[in-house]
Each structure stands twice: as structure tokens, then as C-alpha cells.
Amino acid sequence: SAVISQKPSRDICQRGTSLTIQCQVDSQVTMMFWYRQQPGQSLTLIATANQGSEATYESGFVIDKFPISRPNLTFSTLTVSNMSPEDSSIYLCSVESSRLAYGYTFGSGTRLTVV
Amino acid sequence: GIQVEQSPPDLILQEGANSTLRCNFSDSVNNLQWFHQNPWGQLINLFYIPSGTKQNGRLSATTVATERYSLLYISSSQTTDSGVYFCAVGSNFGNEKLTFGTGTRLTIIP
Image (cartoon, rainbow over all chains, first blue to last red; front, top):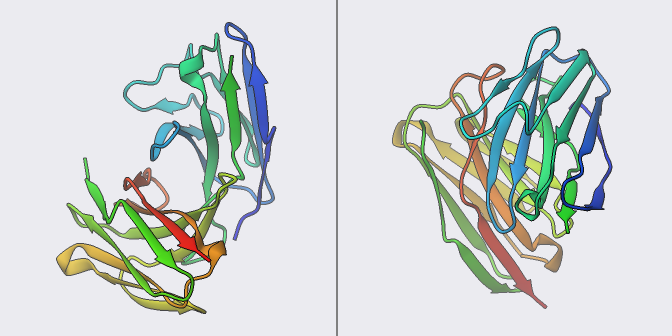
């Protein structure tokens, strides 16, 4: 399966600041996905990122709050902007596995705490 | 959109016990995966199983696509099995999001 390196693994940030999360994949992939997991909850898709085009955001998520970059087929960033304590969550990136019949694989996640 | 329900929401077992986790989904799918989220938040892919049966060591899974459910079996539970188990489905593999269930929190007591 594809291997994803995600960083940082965790961070504690002041409210009003921004944090950029990076995901690097060991193979070229067409689409990358960004998810949020609020405390005690399931995972919710934030947006889908295609190389060379603007990300597609799910209902309830906007580009000004969660800008995404996708400069090439192996890399993407998600920025959480103007953070508030409600943004405290685990953020995960995901790609379709390069190996058939394996499904989607996920990065190790970024645990964000906003104080 | 597609709905995914998991049961039970919580399960507490003694080490060595067996368990069955269930995932019901509301529409046809061509992707179904089971994940284990460990206490550190890492999401581990257990099975890609849109239909049929698979086994991997003490774990096995069965999906009956025509009846829209999947089961995850854990035998001889160990404390390292503790965590949250998620079922996730997709209807257009490679071009569609995964929709996650609410999860089953499994706690294995020594």
C-alpha cells in the first residue's frame, strides 16, 4: 500500500494563529483527501485535493478556514486558519492505495490542541 | 448520502474472549473497509472487503453486499486490540469520499 508521511504529529497552538499540516506520499496519486476527527467523534471529510486544480470542499467547510495546496502528485498541505478551541481535533490525510484491492490508506494524523 | 451504522457502540471484554462487530449501510457500495484506531489516534487499515470473507490471523471479516451489512470478528482478544473500530464505505472507488460509521469502542481487560 501507499505510505504517507504526515507532520506534525501533534501541536498545541494559540487561538487566532494558523497551522499548516503536510502530507507526503511515496507514490504519485491523483486525489488526496483531508479528514477531521473531533474528540470522541467519527471522521468527516473536509475536502478533496486534485493536483492542478482547486480543492473541492464538503458542506460546512470553506477555503478561507481550511486552505489546501496540492503542488504535485505526491504532496499536499492543509492549513487550519485563525484557530479557535473548536478546531481542536485530529486531522488526517488519505490516498487511494497504489496496491490493488487495498482501499484507502491514511497518514498517522495530526493531533491539534488550540488553547 | 449513504448512512453507516455500527453496533455495539461500546464493548468491554476480558482478554481471550471473542467479539463480533457489525456495520450496516444504507445503499450499494463498491468499497468497504474496516479500520482500527489505536489510542494514539493512528488509523490502521484492517480489511478492504466490499464483498465476501477475508481472514488475517485472529481477525476476519464478512460482507454481505446484497443485505448491506458487514461483520468484523475478533477471536482470542488481546489488550492491544483495544481502541475504536470504524467501518467506512464508498460508492465510487478512487473518486469518492469514504463515509465513516460512528465506531465501536472496544476495551479489553487483562
